[in-house]
Image 1 (cartoon, rainbow, N blue to C red):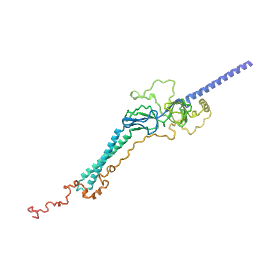
Image 2 (image 1 turned 90 degrees about the horizontal axis):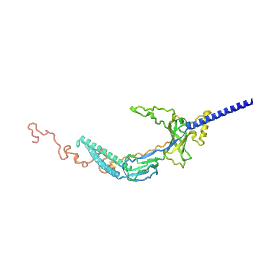
Image 3 (image 1 turned 180 degrees about the vertical axis):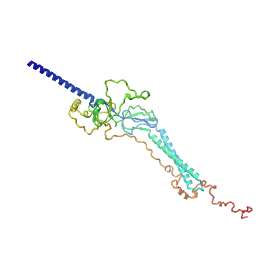
Image 4 (image 1 turned 90 degrees about the vertical axis):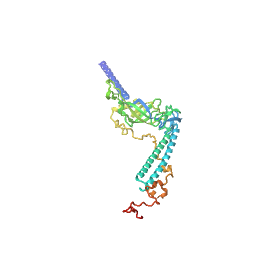
Length: 411
């Protein structure tokens, strides 16, 4: 009997040990599954940055290059200079045309004012309208000349090509003597204020991604990580089956594998803290961890604790993190980069450009009626239209005629 009891005890012990091993193996498998499949971390992270492709707004030969490759520049610094000779000549010509148009406008306004002051005895309404129209045409020509001068002045300023952002000149291949063409980029400037990190998470891990959740990015070669927060989640990725084929119909792949690979969704992480000794370079790879996995400590231990926590009662989530469905950016200040737009100011008036050519031009037409007769040109009063003081008034026809023999009364 004692032998049978011993054999049964050993068999029970073996079964118990086997069950314990199976439970531990299952637990380890679940932890590893959660760590590699559902835990919100990924090795597929990249440092990203905005690059300003600088292109000239005017064409010409480059006469001066003021930067070198990988040089730090600030917004507004001159990168290179285009030969300004042609643009200076164009500006001088435009200014001369403005003076010419200003003088012509003064004269045309004075002529129109004189005609407007005369009565219909001295001039006709048609002539008044003609001179008023000529004055309006002169005003339009003067405004056009001012606009051309403003354009010429801006083009001269654009011969100095400036950096639109704070950053670093990269891959500089420009040399003095090269010809710069309008709209063709020839200098690239990395925007030093626009770095961010993209983490490409598998779709099986998206349930743990929250906008506003803390995140860390461990760069290869640096022990201290970069800290930040999830800024937004991409709302769409490319689908091969959506490509249009013959007659615009979708091209669907008929082969569907049994093993489904999880798609990767880009998650944008806003950088908040960079260690002093870390030099960010666009294209660097990083291991990105989000939420509870972004804190310091052993990652496997954190996964085990999270697994144990999932077996227990659910705890309410904090209100500081947005739910998974909300993928808008985190509230806060977001710098918007803008370029100063050219604002050509209104040029001086014709009286300021060509003063003294037509005095009294600003007076009302009624005031011109009080001018002495000597100030009016002789051609404005024709003998056909107005009688002279020395010429007697013309008598009415037949007033001194005799009705009988046609002789005058004096006779």
